[in-house]
Length: 416
Image (tube, rainbow, N blue to C red):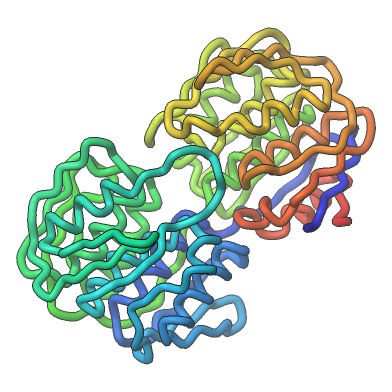
């Protein structure tokens, strides 16, 4: 276990670059199994989750190495279809490998995935989609066994626009016979990025970013070089940090269009915003105002992965805010930790009522999950003392050297 110690009182000010997107990199890494040639990924972040995914790929026989800032994955040596239990339990995104392993080997054997405990995240839509593609699935003893000797294109109608299921079926379908149409597909930018990678490998996918994605099966893809998109959640986290600390922060190497839902909230809070082609600047000269009502929704709605950080900001805003979590039913664990710091909030089912406090206080708190831990780091910057955040390794699942970025912006944070 590692901890962060955060000293409160500093205004975040300056410029920081967004890292490559975790949520785009993980499915793209899973998709490298679909080709027998080396793939070079640029802007792939160095994260615990990425490291776990690479270890899983190596366990399947892939060759993985860093070359400067590039990550090279050669799946030509892959020769196994059984995913390791321990590594898969560490990583929710290991489920992405089900579709790509099945497509590559016509067989896949995987444990149920792990990851942050933020609520029930069933994989029934993943399995439904694979069955629609003519896969045979057996669930037994905590494992999922799939056989797909003849995957066929099909129409896959999702009851809910699941990001993971959309990406999984895209990967399973690229080498299936015929055309697959995914209806009610998720529209997140990371799905568009996966489409970009697949097409760069010679596959035929269109419609990503809309509710209908079409995949024309081809016999084989090829290696490529591809740049992973910037991380919109990391971008949003640093912009919220600027608002909370009455700071002035510019996030570079990002895509402003992917954080529109957050920018709308920051504007409502009284922040001054400046958008550039590949950067966003947020300036907050005074204490931010409350936001009357916010609810998380699939993209382009407000992202659930920024809900904890927004929760932290509203904990120091003027007035009372209402925040509804519609995606995960157990994503308010940070609320109790924030209370240890003097925050005022009440939770009823999936709704939080937050009354902003003028000053938070240093305390010892626990990062129960990735984004909740990031929220506690931001809250620690708004205290009159030192906040110790236990289990900082959970934060590092999605933030590349967050402590270095905070220090570069003038904050005080140390690893203990």
